[in-house]
Image (cartoon, rainbow, N blue to C red; front, top):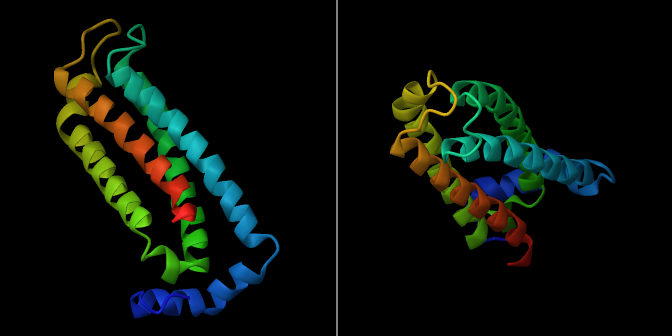
Length: 163
């Protein structure tokens, strides 16, 4: 445990749940594998949406792509949050003070802001467009920003263990 961490995170790590995760042969390992599987599924779904929003896959309806891939992305994101919470609980006091983890949280917040902005202001303009119709610049911009941010989140997540 890291005493420099805020008390709530020290308490979370020291809790019975934190101890059970660390002492179990299977819980941490299963959460770790689940996190990676969720990441792969999430990345695939987001990539499909973002690539379409950047103008590729133009023969498909943007509304159809968004609707189908969004469901998968949301389910995978829930999996990421659930498994990430298990991984975090096991080492909360150490991880919360890690600058790369803090960067990861900030990048996730920015990516979610991008999604929110897109959903409220841009998606309504593209959902009803026909295949091969050029997308608005805002959709292309949101797609490129999303790709960059989620790649940075994944890179930060994989770097946490090394700092």
